[in-house]
Length: 251
Image (cartoon, rainbow, N blue to C red):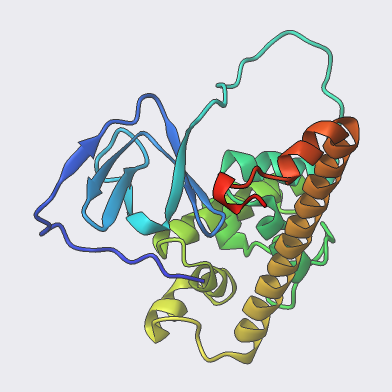
């Protein structure tokens, strides 16, 4: 995982790039960051997370793949029949999308933390799917840690906070989720705890496995689509497959 480092403000070139309404920066590592506006400062791009200038994150410009407009709509309350209950997977997808975190990462954290048991309680008192400690749950506004929706919302928001705190270094963020930010800062990285190192490795391995499977599935779909197109227009494909030769090469 590449680390995204902050660079000081003493940069000769400073160009402000307005981000009308809200934009999403898509990073090469798969993360996305919603921001109100941005400033390019040489090798670094500063993404302002809100209208307050104090809320920002600095990202190495070469780590940003592209920008997209945030087309999500604000929530609207309508008089309508009760919504169909969501499955746990739907809950995770909805909450991950709201916090701009890959749902595969949230799933991998849940798998490592609780094995998808919403009533799980650790020997240290951590509760629920993402194993929130009582004080952490209280700070995140989670009144019932055994409620899957509330627990995943709080845990995902906490994970998002840690990712931003460590400049989207997933290894540090996961270590902090397990051992606490103070230990990560004390050891300037993953602390030398067997439990934490196994925990981080387990999540990274599971997350990478999901991404590899996704890439293979996408490649298979693209190959199938190409084969379907070829069978539908064989003459066009044959013509395209045999390019015309330069006149001097024709015998």
